[in-house]
Image (cartoon, rainbow, N blue to C red):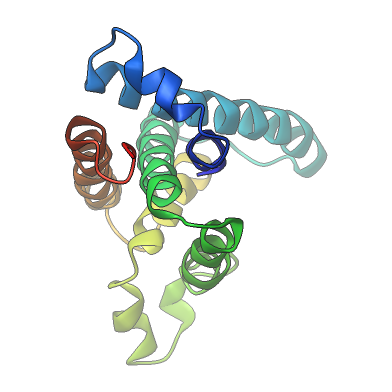
Length: 177
């Protein structure tokens, strides 16, 4: 969200929009930028955490797919948020009031199977829950739901979010003055 918001705030997004590029190229550029930044942070954290915690890596292929889908989802969502945000507080609001609480109740620190009814069932309506479960399966080889379901739900969120960001670039909505 910060890259596209800063580009809009400082008005250099106009230079990007006037470049001889297709909207899909601009969208892909912003999303790949967020993807690479998050991947670098994640790899650095994993390089520190895995040796310190002896965390297993049971299903690396599932973990890689989950990471790619999650990065596409959050990069595209950040692009959408950055386009719609009118001030920095709006980007922080989404992170602090939407994503962070959903992550905390999505089973990051516990298995949702430990929750009493109806909280266990309600957790399955949380989209972050499926990302957490896909990552958990990649590391531990176990999760509260099928890894295919977790990856499918994550992909079902990532693709429309990417297309939404693409539509915003194609239409110029909130980008062109």
